[in-house]
Image (cartoon, rainbow, N blue to C red):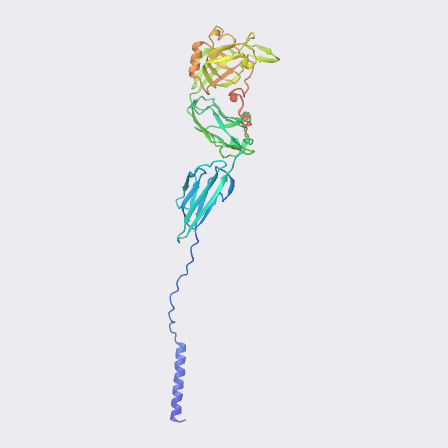
Length: 404
């Protein structure tokens, strides 16, 4: 081998060794540029409304709800037909608006709402809807009337509808009686328009009572809806209970459990007459009565219960200091003409006769809801005669509810 050839071989082996060394040695990779995070555009705000656009027969008592997703509400307007705004409340996070007032029947409402999102995107919604139109509306009246603020311990709460509700259960569910202190009680349908609410036991003196007829917007059957809501607030006064015993011809008055007065009385005579085939009894029925109203002077006529005024026992007279205790015409009143009979015998046509002074005391002290109990006569008071509610057992009373 010549010297040149040997030199070339050394160069080749050196290159091979260098390549091998390079292949076995770790070297850092080239630094790549930092990757930028990918960004997803925020969803645009969206507005939903209840009722939906063009909804018909909407309940006027269900709240309107406007809700924003992916953003918050920036404005809400719900307009009545006359241009006034429906009141409402926006949630703290400005995502939900709800109406806070009932709507009218058979009216069209316009709704406009706007919302904005975090990205600056916005949304706007414009809708309208129409509330239901009742075939008929039903109006509730109360007794005692709202002007009466204090009643006795025997007073039932009465609701009278101006039309018979087709769905009694729905009507009854819309009526409530609350009291402080609370007391057990129930509704009883007296007829197809009238309900009485009576506690199981007499009211406690001082009880605060609230009666509510929340019937507006409530379907009462056959297209009938409540015309308006009504509320009655009153207080139960002293316990005043007059007990009349036919065996003694005496009235004993208890006030808050203590004897206050004793008066001689004369009640209905133990007789009857027949007029045109109808028997008319003058006996005062036994039972528990409740005072309904009173008059300084009340004109009374026997013709109102079928006895002509020209009969021997007929009458048409102005009667002083009269407190009504039944629908059939029984009053507790002053009767100066029968003072000699009071405490001795019964001579009236059914009323309870008192002397002028006793009649004055009774008139001044007894009023709506105070109790009169009559004992030991030969007939019984019908529960439906006036506020004869207390002449029904509690188990019988509960059967009068449409919810049972």
